Image 1 (cartoon, rainbow, N blue to C red):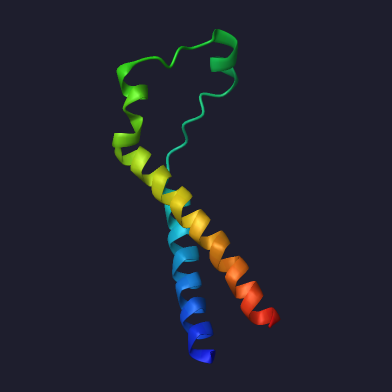
Image 2 (cartoon, rainbow, N blue to C red):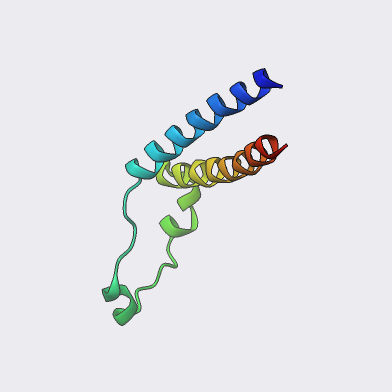
Length: 82
């Protein structure tokens, strides 16, 4: 059981590090208050295919790693409570 705890902690650390790096390298996409006032339309080709771009893939991996991070947090909490 101690080996499993050690392996989970190492995986947890690596995922946390990857999540931090992915979060820091993402570009800011908020247009801010000006887009709210002007009502800018995002109905163009780029916005429809945004998931295929580098930024879209980074977002997808950030969400995946965040979910895995949360699941590992719960799993480690259960393991250490027992």
